[in-house]
Length: 176
Image (cartoon, rainbow, N blue to C red; front, side, top):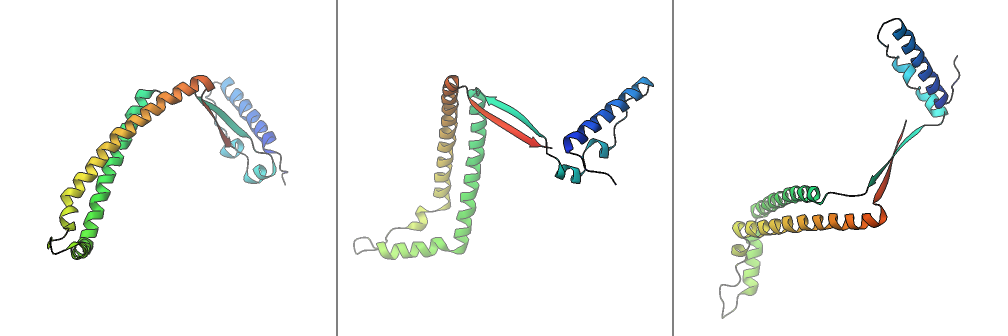
């Protein structure tokens, strides 16, 4: 029966065994042997008993390249614009297929009819597929220009503030 040792002690013992195996095999002229998977990693029971080792990496974003930010934000906003146009098209087709525009158009026409204007307001003509697509395309183009400009301006402002504060520092941690 084996006793459970802390994970750190077991890792040291495994590392010593690997080092000894590598020295012995290289002295004999053979290539270094790979240790068995069970020798390289502690068992689940040993890991549960002993403390875990945490690897940490500290990253610092002291500066971002405005040109790269502009290119990435342009591509992402173009993708968002395409998604917007497709979503508006699908939504319009679904609503038209359900007869929402006809029903709503008739209701609006009845409410807006008068003696001076017997036709009333034609909602169906206003919310036609052509008008809806022109409007959503114009919104998508404006979105591309604004998002690209604001992201690039944000990169310049970040670089300015990072020159005073040193930037953002992030610590990434991974437990073994």
